[in-house]
Each structure stands twice: as C-alpha cells, then as structure tokens.
Length: 257
Image (cartoon, rainbow, N blue to C red; front, side, top):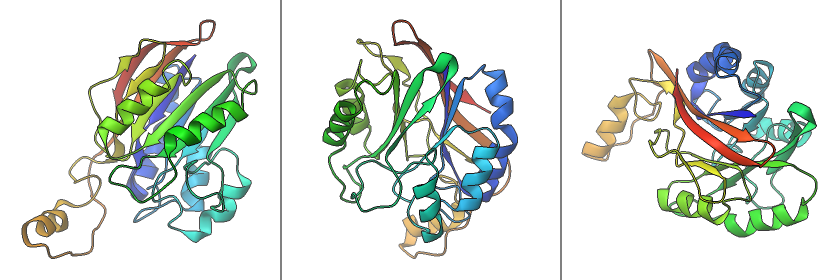
C-alpha cells in the first residue's frame, strides 16, 4: 500500500493547485490513499467549507488540520458532519469535529488517520502522547493500519512522538512549519517518519505569505497586513510504502511538484 501525504495547503492559490493536481500525483505515485493537511486552505488562513469540499472532490481521501482549523465558524457544521475532515484530537472535547477517522482502503484494510497538535511553542492543548495512547487503546481491533499528522512547531517533539509510537503507528509525519525537511527515515520497529512534509503554496513567499510585510515586521516590529504570496506554486509531501502483511513501512520518499 502507498499512502501519499501532502503538506499544508496555503490559501486560494495553494488550494487551486492541489485541486488540479491531486489525482495526477496519485496516479504518478501509484497512491492508494491521499491525506492532505488543509488547515490553511481558505483565503487568508483557516479552513472553509468551499475549500474542504473542493479538495475532497479532487481526490483527497482525508483532510487533516492544525491550530488554525477552527478559525472560521462556518466550517463547524462541515467538521461535525463529514467524517473525512478531521481536526486535532487534543483540542478540548467540546470543539466541533473529531480528531480521527477510519477509512476503508485496498483489500478492505481499515486505516485510522489521527491528527494531533504539539505543545511546545503552541497554544495550550492536551498532551498529544497521552491522547493518542488513549485513542489507540479505545480503537484496538477496529483498524489495521494507523497514520498520524503531528501538527507541531518543535522538531524535537515530533521526533519524540515518532519514536514513542514506533511500531504502533505506521505512518508518522509532521506539518505546521511549511518547510519540508530532509530526514525521512524508517524507524527500528517498522514505522516511517519525516519531521515536516512542507507546504503547497507560492515558491516566492515566506511560508506562503508575501515577503515584504514579514521582513518589515522582523526589521522594524511594525506589523502590516499579511497577504498571500503570488506566482509559481510548489506542492510538497511524501509517499509512504507499507507492507500490508508485516504492517511495516518499507520506504519513505519526499515529493515536490
């Protein structure tokens, strides 16, 4: 089985590019499932219903989120009603939506997809290690393979999470920083991991934003309104290949389109 994961889709331009290319990438990489982080897919940031529906219709099987997922109230009903658009598991229980989903894949395999937020340099949330431990215990026997999008700032937290769940979660990948890392690896107990899969957004930008106001803020501490970057789009992600008999990841490959 091959699972394609696509990094944070940024704004209208990133969403448009992903919508046009998800199926092409799925065919080119011989993917069985496509998981897209969509927490910044709306114009500005956050997730809106229109962007979520467009990404799912274009071939994304599951949308994951992050710290901006609940920025737009209009998406709350969609998150409550659509099982394949999830938000971080370790948000307060009263938050709309769910932190995981189980989707049927090839040969009837049940793939559980989890989304969690990190705690380091992020707004306060429940401990992601404990939350996922509880979820794995609660869902034992209800899934065959597991995938987790760790939406976190600190590389050390993502690396610790991956090694803690090595062998229990097959596919572990980081999102949030919008910068693809070059540390894809196979862990000792059979999991595949990469610290961050990057973004789908403008190349000439700072994390998807026009450079000028970002630079001005760093130089002068004057904050002007951030605007989406323009020009050529780059889509980043990774492909995880899994041996469905041993339930071990056999390869992790970074992709850039």
